[in-house]
Image 1 (tube, rainbow, N blue to C red):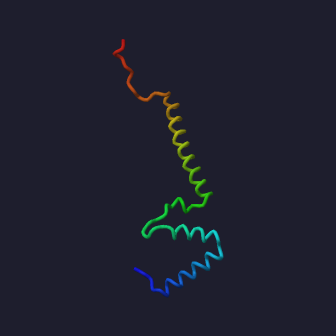
Image 2 (cartoon, helix red, strand yellow):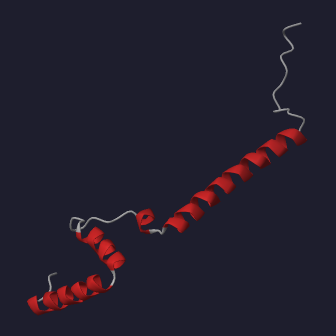
Image 3 (cartoon, rainbow, N blue to C red):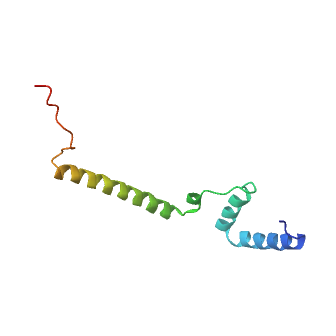
Amino acid sequence: MSLAPSDRQALAEIEHSLAAGDPKLAAKMATFAALPPGDTIARWKLLSPWRLRLRRTAMAVIALAIIGIFVFAMIRSGGHTGAVPNVSAR
C-alpha cells in the first residue's frame, strides 16, 4: 500500500519540521529511516538508559533472590540432597 504523492510530501514536510525543532528526535528518526522495509528494531534499543539500567538491576535482584532461596533451603535441610548413602562400601 503506497501513499499518494501529496501525502508523501506532507509527511516529508512534517518530518523536516520535527527534525529541525528537536535534534534528539531527528537522531531517532534517522534510526528508523535506516531500517530496510519490513525490518524491525529491537525493543531494548528503544529504551532509555535509565530503563535499561533498571531492567538489568531487576534481573540481578531476581537472580540473587532465587539463589538465596536455594541456599536457604539447603541450609534448612542440613545440606542433604536426599541421596541414599552407599552402604555396599562396608
